[in-house]
Amino acid sequence: QVQLVESGGGLVQAGGSLRLSCVASGRAFSPNGRAWYRQAPGKQRELVAGITSGGRTDYADSVKGRFTISRDNTKNTVYLQMNSLKPEDTAGYYCNTYPIPGRWGPGTQVTVAS
Image (cartoon, rainbow, N blue to C red):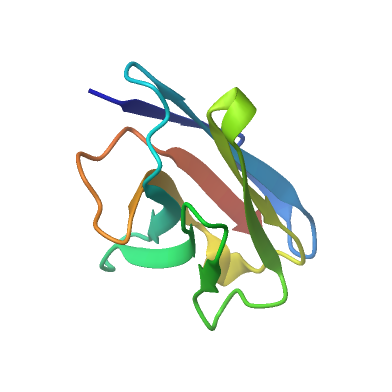
């Protein structure tokens, strides 16, 4: 069974940047798509960005032009580069399979101060 471990979250000022990482361990990095999801307090979890095994990317409208998802299969890692962060980006960020998520990991918290 593949385990996904997120890291890279933190506290940043509005307009700043963060890069999240998601490392897969256990079974070999499957050819499945991977995605980043987020959940803010009191809100439903939502898709932020997804990347297919073929490299096609999908983004939520709210992050287009600011966030970039990428994957390095040699490192079993998926990244989310987040630029021009806004307070409304504050949430727990979770890595999972895409387009259908599996078991959720602990995530990593991103807090954007205004």
